[in-house]
Image (spheres, rainbow over the protein chains, first blue to last red):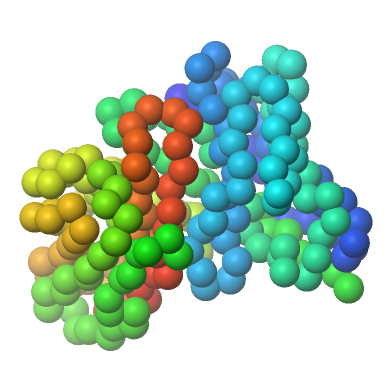
Length: 111
Length: 114
């Protein structure tokens, strides 16, 4: 099973880049890395996913190491609205579309 | 929330009573999921459905049952609610099997069992 490890909390100054790390040392070659976030009391929101290459979309960038054992989600210019819990997920079950969310990283963006 | 509604949004019930939570989607997505979220545990999958009348257990299925008679509705039932089932429940949907795929989440139902 590929599991993920994230720091429980981080702070970031408003306007600066937020870099959220994730370790997934047992990931298999065909498993994607997904990032979701959850703003207080709301349902989780998809951010980005990647397999081997770095990915970028309108919300964030995802940097995956060459050995695929870790990744970093980058929010280039953090705003107060980016304060949320961020989940790094690797799907571990192939009998269904099951995600295992874990406890994530609580990011606080400071004015 | 990607055309997903959950009802009720808040409910307080007594131990031993049956409770049914409803998830309704307007996206015609095939896959639907029920999660619960508790402090210190993140989100944990309860049950999921991969089509009408096709469901399976997730990580924490004990004490819960589900039904899906229509593509758009996925019901979660607590046959006899217990205080340990006090939680926030989220429904999610997705439209494909096999990676990569996204799950879209509903707004959640806060359930309190007294």
